[in-house]
Length: 368
Image (cartoon, rainbow, N blue to C red):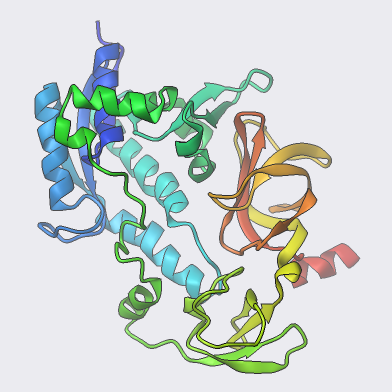
């Protein structure tokens, strides 16, 4: 007897292919789909490219499961690419994978699942979904493979999305997944993991942004913390908080990007010590294992995917504004990245980082 009908997103890689196999072995009726999200039909680079479609289709045939290619280019453009471009033009450094997970891989895939009467959707992410033992809310939990853990990029998923999601890969070590994949397709089992942003495979963000907007971004001044002009930069889109390499100018001592002033078209530089702060402000808050954030709650927080989580305390300072204070100063708090809060192995929730200082309009509210 089937445990239910599940739609699984298949990229043609080892993780999603193995996830499809595991779900079928567990007794689900599995339908594989590859999501065309960026490229024109027939192109060989980007999300859901021709090569990915061929690999995913071959795996689906070997597994004996139904397979479809879905066109999600409109959803991807509006919710991921446009968001990415607009964030950079506002002096922020976004994480497009987080937006893609919430608005495309989950929202669009669930919409398709509803149309065909499927019970669940599934992915090959290294994470687990469990109900929190105290709050009873659905939450993302750290995967068995700590080195491949992808919980940071999944913090924005809703309770409704989590309730209908399966993530079988999160219960295995990466080496185990490759061994299982070898029984399905030896070529797939040996494929390397993708690393770059899928719609910028060459990693040249600046060139991509200029192509998309059809314009060159204006040079401006490098300035120090006192506003003294130190030289000229080539355009704000080429810089991010904490950056040292690629500034294109020698200062006689190590200098790092402290922030971007969009209004003045200035890149503010500082020494390494100035990059450290204990306080982080975030908005667009999403609660996961906890129903809400209240003053004094203790968590372990991450301010970027590669960041080693650290102890912190939170409080709400506005309807959608959270203040997180770390016990120890953290380096390069970057607007546009995500602050993700962990309660043990569970994701408590998080938000989009605004910066290390309270936004000016909020400072006025606090004073009042």
